Amino acid sequence: MAKIAIVYHSGYGHTEKQMEAVAEGARGAGGEVTVLKATDLHDPESGPWDVLEAADAIIFGSPVYMGSVSGPFEMFADASSKAWFDRKWQDKLASGFVNSSNLDGDRGQAIHRMITLAMQHGMLWVGSGLPPQDPAYPGDDPDNLNRLGFFAGGGSQSDADKGPDVVPRASDLANARHLGKRVVEQAERLK
Image 1 (spheres, rainbow, N blue to C red):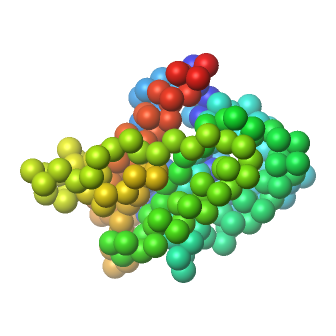
Image 2: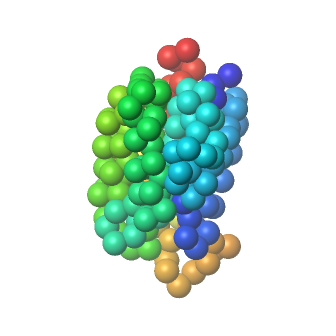
């Protein structure tokens, strides 16, 4: 069974809802999932860092703030330098998901911050593996797994004036479940 760790930050609940769908997809594919909040990993001397070391794959998650990952996620990334020194994440799988309030919202910039973090740790990145939106499906159709045309990981969009009880949309949550499943499948292939 692949061990999957999800490290995320959510400021308003939208990214947490996306994380729950990623975890659901990973569990549904047979993965053993541990969810960690980035805010619990700001100190490299304390917190559940051993979970990350034991994982086969680490999935990062963050809202997009000011064109990149959130400050709390960046603090986790900075704290991971102790693991970097000892190459504790070398050759693990990595993936990520991001949520923004705008249709573009610089999701690409934020996910590339996560990719850079993974590459610095010597990890192997798993993208969505999905084609772009199928014109036969409207934007919120759950069968439309990539309505945003986002390939580097999981992408969702949540209107700023709507709460996490309404957004992310069903199609974006289906995208997140797909990502969790894909990471487990790739981890199993490498085992």
